[in-house]
Length: 318
Image 1 (cartoon, rainbow, N blue to C red):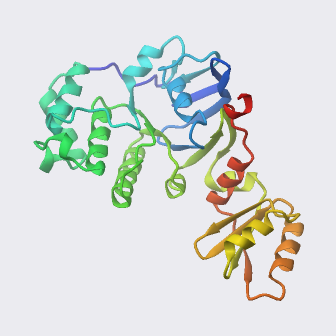
Image 2: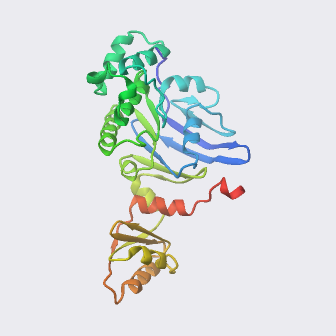
Image 3: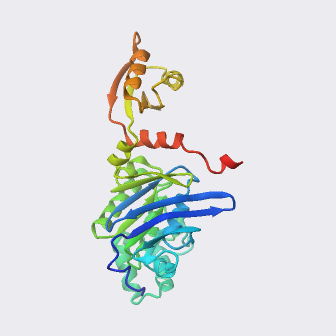
């Protein structure tokens, strides 16, 4: 069995400051600092290649930062990385278990790696907890994406970690399986387990207790969903009508409008200068069949806004 998870005196499950990591001339993680509390689901968002996975690996001792400091489960992320690795559950984006073994055999193999006592009891408890009993003897290669995801979560929970690090765990999984997965995460969080999860889905981001947005190595915003939205100071208008794509192109060149995004049969226009935005919208719909209304700025509006203003640290030097 692994040693007890974490040090009881640790105030935060993750507490890191000014982490930096370079690969060659690319600054992949740039002065990233954040804190994750016990029983908190902390969402990590950003475009592909933004440094999310590298940041997660730095926090759990899988990579050594070039500079910066911090703790994970009370352990120093540089000097005590081995203790961290033994006490966290890490679920990668790519399914990494054995498809020619059954679900039970996979879990038993993982339990053997952890040198766990009473392996059968531990595996049975895991199968029951994640609702896998009925498929325990099914070959893993025949499972759907949702069932593979459930197996991966069961495997990384076998040693009863106090922290889960999940790297885009629901990529390619159907909406029902995603919903069930998040219900399970909230059940775990209610039992005191902390979760750091990277995701591209806004509905998942809204289910996190707190969020951090990282773009090309830099942490641009963090806090609750409402705090992240408020931090950007955007006002948003929704326009209903026809030919919205053409309207969107025209509005992007209009003073006062920082961003336009078509959402199905509506167009969202956002800006930081609220008065100029309202004038621009009023002028755009005047004398037309278009209808406009001011709405609350949403999380997706904010993340698109942040992404559009981020510089790709790979392209910038090419």
